[in-house]
Amino acid sequence: MPMIIVQSLMKQIAPVSSEERMEYLTDTAVASGNAKAEFVRSHQRSLVRHTKPQKRPASLSELAAMGIQVDV
Image (cartoon, rainbow, N blue to C red; front, side):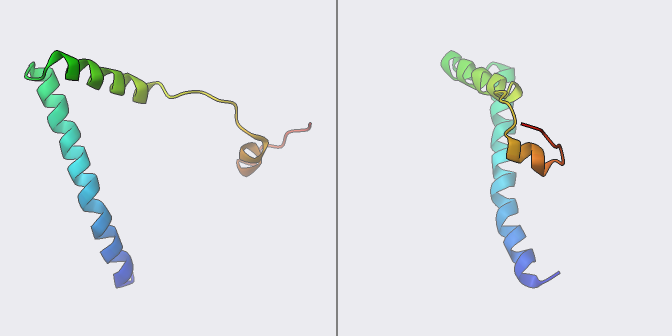
């Protein structure tokens, strides 16, 4: 693997790891009851929003990219 790809990957891993760590700490604070009620409600809405993504119909180009032919 070229060194430039490895270096680029290492630069991306650190922010992802810290974001995951922050999410873990937030979840722990909420679950333990050590967070303010307003923050808990905000965090709960965020979790619900991420678990129930908005549905939308696929476009014809998206269907074509998946190999699904649609006659119009």
